[in-house]
Image (cartoon, rainbow, N blue to C red):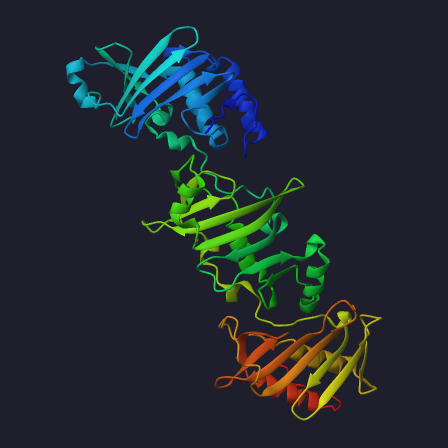
Length: 476
């Protein structure tokens, strides 16, 4: 694989203008003078020729090539520019805070007989600097460092200056798995989020109504003022926004704990379990007016954490469990089955075992709709009370999955919502005899939930006395 260079002024994937400016500054400007310090190197990072680091994680090189830097075999697009910039800064401006006398025979006390890291920095002017990194001083926490060929003195350096020398080269790979949204709400950034995979019984998609898709807007009429809907292979539901924010928000700005592998081939990536992932999330991310399609796959890792892979990447990450990885479909949707607005309806049909009731609605004046039952005008307030009852139909919180074989059971009640928009197909809710004190709920031919049978009893009672004066009981 061709290894790209980390170049000056080239903004890599995920790099902001600020960090781009910082990189340019460090590579072309001389570092500020260190007062009251023991200075070993003090020059622009652009004069670094090569850095060789050997530590407990192995050995690797950083070399200047063609106006940029090559960080071992790490692809330029994968480099964490902020961390890499800091390492370059620590190699261009090398200084100590103090010095102690220590013969080489005593270096074992400072863990410099077997140093935690050995570093060689070569500059383009021909000079070079060797560092050996030892233990920390117990009180100040400064780090003991041997410099060059000096075998009679050791130096004390700030741990922040030596930390990069102790890290594995993979520490300089960006641990950012997914980008941040750049906006306050994930709803503004994410589009058409589909969940599938081994832990998902049946794939489902969260769709935004504000995107202008006519089909989605028609589906959303079933739920009145909903901003997002959840679509399964057979059903459509309104999204619970509180739970939805937690789930969708956790998809963005994911930071890995470790890098499991990089520069991987498709076959090597598959070996982590991504051919049959535990979870797969496909979504479109809108940032700065541009829309990017992303596919995130999750597979279990033996320590209890998870492997993660993003499409078009040759890196596999290790991440901890996040809310979207524990998604519960029944919590993702609002419990209410159908909640259209009266102003969007042309009529409602209620069919009981004894009779069919046809309500006609003229909502030309939304505040004062004209309601007719079998040609006779009905009190709007009384109809609103009845309408609140029929739209209160809600599941019992137990997701059954797509349930078949219930269509032949006895129908206890059918409610049909007819819409003013001729392109909107009527919504039909059938209640079928279910388990003890439960009814199966079939919405437009799809059954995934039950609810209390008392709802059917209340609706039948209410519709039979709709033209009377006796109060309608809305609770069940």
